[in-house]
Length: 454
Image (cartoon, rainbow, N blue to C red; front, side):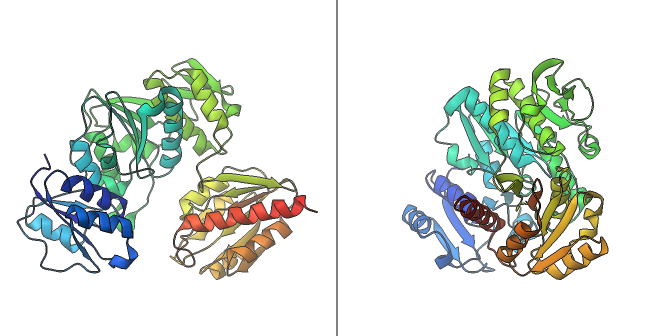
């Protein structure tokens, strides 16, 4: 399989690079096309692929390079589903897959594949699962997918009984045909990525696809408190198991401050440091996976007790002068900021704003009861001001984060929270939201250093 074929790769990035490198070494003819100019690509990777014999076409998508001589089109997950090459490949009956699907078809039979998906919480749940299993099984465990490295980068490194923990995005699932995990977990589902998948109905169908590929030998772990998940997966063939943050169930649940797995105590809830009910659900999901692999409770307790969160996702940064600072720059939509706000009971100063996308800040209103100050930044700061004024919450607007942060320090009282949870993308001022988060953390660090020198 995937030998002596002619293969078109659409999109460079990490997955395109790794797929091209792997496929050319299997005797395939490989053409890689990316709309970005060559000078914007990783020079070392470009040089390596050229030396291996990959034909590279950068800077445009010529109309005449895709024809019926190709056996596969391997699409970068970020490429739109209605891209002209994707549509043309479908007309020519060329199979359209992605790097994950390709690599899955080449995986050895004796590994354990864990796939974690959902609208929110999948990165935290994947990271927690990986950390627990890494503590239990060491180098047998690999972190792959949307959070780690492309799956095909592992193909030549796997040993029997290795464990792959993979965060799976909807963009990846869109081109799955056969991919299925031995253990799949669905955190939750709500409306998202409609710009990419066009409708919520299609988004839900895509999210559920890998579970419908499962057989009765596989396991699906579902969030009992998310009705959309239960409805979408009601007809799957795999063994279904459940976790719940609210009710005592036949599965993993919380009772009297303790976490239980099928009525057996695992650990105390107060050992978990990351805030919010959503993070409790993430922990319960990770525990369910760990127990399927017979991980000891002491290992689970140790990892969850030490875990401080995924960087840029409701990440605790530090406490300065009694004020706690949290970096949630990955909250690029309203839903994520709703989750963040529901995690705190102390007075909150929130930083909102960024790229103008018509986001409905009014949808935050039910979650604003503990907010005492609003700092608006970026392109949509004037709308943030209008929103705050309607709620009679003191609101201050600044073009950049640096000035906004200074105001946070000024107005936030001892024992309060400063929360960067913008409900907005960062592209008005930053190449990516992680740069915004790193800047926020830099200001917190400087604040603490200046305070200690006084």
